[in-house]
Length: 396
Image (cartoon, rainbow, N blue to C red; front, side, top):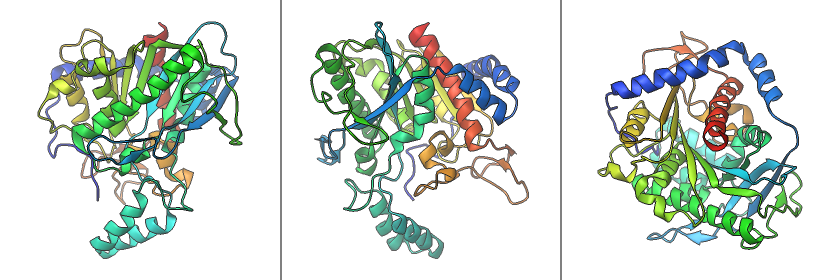
């Protein structure tokens, strides 16, 4: 099975990380707990989101560009959530980037892979996996739209005045690049999209001119974003390997690669799958941009080393570090398309479970069990933290 680039043994959590995590939890948890069960929290979340959010997509092709070094194709596609009334004041831009997941919704290949795993037939397992991780997908097989897995979060942010662009990265997921090269490729994808938005905002031209389509009907839709996007107030959020990508993107060493006129003011790594075996931590070092990190205690994909890694990356930061451990949260529920209730291909609950502990979860191989959050409650709690983080750092 393909694994994340994480170290086999977690690093010891520093006293700085413990203190910061405790502060973040102390700040946020009373607000979440006061909301009560999922229904109460859902009502509170809806009450805070202004109406009038619109959604469009753009897709510049499955082979829009090639990865340097390997020549493997990557798409340029995204989903955009924005306030229908853009008003006269430019809106902050938030970029969302999903992580590593299957790229093609081939249900027969998924069934074949499961059967091969049960039988221990690893050649058949690999063959089925290649169909699920191909790019572009085979004719007649639709791509997995992992970018749509954060619609719930994008709607909330757009309701608070942000323009939110959720990128699709299937080409990178299907590629051979791993470790730091994978983080670098994701950072480059962010820059390519930001460059498109910089030109669209400045002149109404470039690759996005005339490229928008209604998210529901697929029909062309004209949206005039010109001079409505504040590229001096950009936030980035990456989930899983996307979390490593946004950290790499915001690192001091890579700021010069941002498109002209772009300033990233806030970065959030959601269950980040860092390459903790990296030999050069300065490639991730952030001292000028606030960084938030969220990790669930039942995460079956990313180990406890995620927060200490980010702690080390921000050890000299004067901008702020905000770690948060979410009790009972797994990895996949933050993305609706990766979660079982979606019925999507390859969706699953990645937390560890025991037959004698129904409704509880742990890290796979762990021994400390606690009540597991539902899909809806995990997303509502995560969205509350994320929304507060970007509102604080991008709007004051």
